[in-house]
Image (cartoon, rainbow, N blue to C red; front, side, top):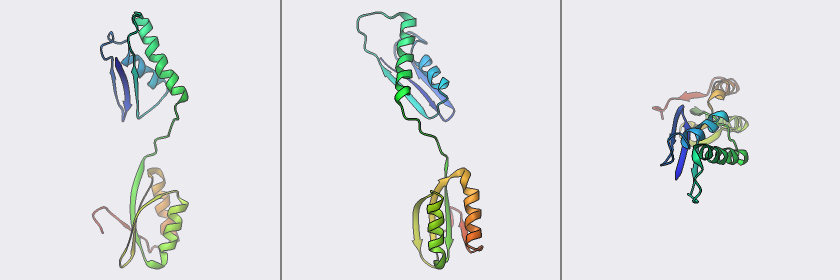
Length: 150
């Protein structure tokens, strides 16, 4: 049996895969909910070994498997990102690059034409403060671009 439980994007799902109803997927999902996790899929494969566990034994087997795996699992925070685009005169290229680096943003693309155009990603909640800081440092010479602008 390959039973699983999913918590992702506010959606949940659980599958017992042939085990008696409510003895595998749903209890596994309860373990994930109790751990306050998001964006996670738990899968347990159980081979029948000739011993009938009964409903209570099945629930314990599946929940213990998930709980033990979670004890050793590395939890990674979900950070919502946004992509920003701006252009700056050539003399400000170094300033923009330093600010992007200092903010821990990821530089995605740089294009050189009449001005230097930057595309970068950073945590969504840091975007407002970052753009304000860059506007101030660039003395208003930074132009913020929408997706439909070159």
